[in-house]
Length: 122
Image (tube, rainbow, N blue to C red; front, side, top):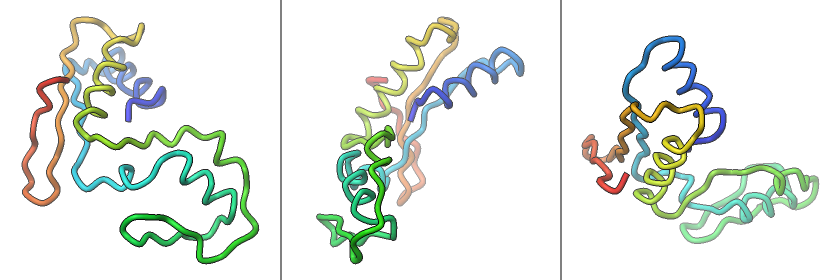
């Protein structure tokens, strides 16, 4: 995701290394689509050990010993891969430290076929 840290790296890459084009590439079957920030925060508040996933829901096999700190982390989850690519490209393009002349492209890498599919909306 286009976090502040990722944008920092892009800006450094252009300013100090001369990078002239940027690509945002997400991938299919991404685990970040399997939960929300609220889900992981609630799981961590209950327990810090590895959770179980039944294909639909997450649960903790053990309880106790968790932390509320997970409620204060931005987990950068998403539900729609193409939408997340479009959002990331837009966030990068609109950042005040990103020169307007740099082309920024958005793609989704299909892990099953090896194809790199452009997200036209990005």
